[in-house]
Image (cartoon, rainbow, N blue to C red):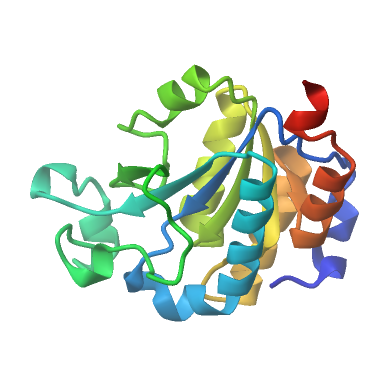
Length: 204
């Protein structure tokens, strides 16, 4: 989790997510990343619960490689240490509140949009905003957030429900994203935003 002072001067834009047009993306919370993801599990689960209670769809991504054809640069860059489909490491962390109706997007590179049907699904659902959580802050989460922005989605990036291998890398991503791509949020901010937004029942 980042110290707010480290990125505060770059956070010049603030906005609250709108539960009527938002989706929650839970990026790569898999067994492979368990030691990294465990500290943020409470924040992830809180964010998921807030979204479910406000009718915000929850989409999980799962990074996996099925054959050399989808390795791209990943195999070379990580010296062959990749997440192979069909292994325990490739499965989502059991503690996550994943439900049968939740979409799981399989991906093989840092972006959840590359060679997937994620954008198509979001457009079908009428989604205009994405809330990004998960791991790793500076790789798959950041790349997905940047691509979402470029594709025309308003992006919210969680500071307390994302994690990576070091605080330095986490903070660097928050600074860059706050400067040019995303609104920064945390569990408290999401909760406050959703409390101030009329529920679907109130809109009927």
